[in-house]
Image 1 (cartoon, rainbow, N blue to C red):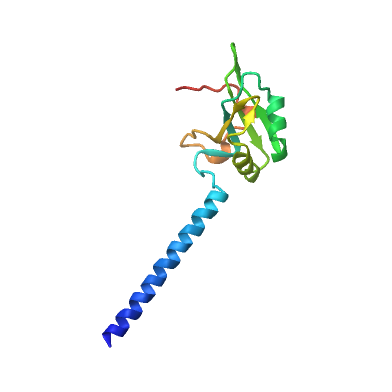
Image 2 (cartoon, helix red, strand yellow):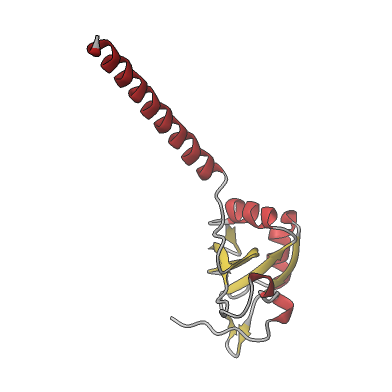
Length: 144
């Protein structure tokens, strides 16, 4: 009699483990198709675009990303010219996510771009609602 209950319990446990494995596989497949952007210390509407060609202009970058409802674009320059990266603001997080997924690794002016979410260091007394927009950034310091 105990064998019957044990076998039933074992079957139920195996079915539950299989259901969890299938659920994990579905979740992983969904994440791969629709990647989630990090939620802490990031501006979810702004992408950092690296590896730009020195001849790439803000106008050209805007044209390439225009299908994703961008609200602004900035390529900082130094005395020697371009710094080879830029920033693109989008009207909403979904547009930024779609742009990152679609455009990351594509060629612009002969160079393969590398996009990522703009990480912003937030002081402890600031909230994430106080992340500066491109129009508010006057200088950017990049260090290796």
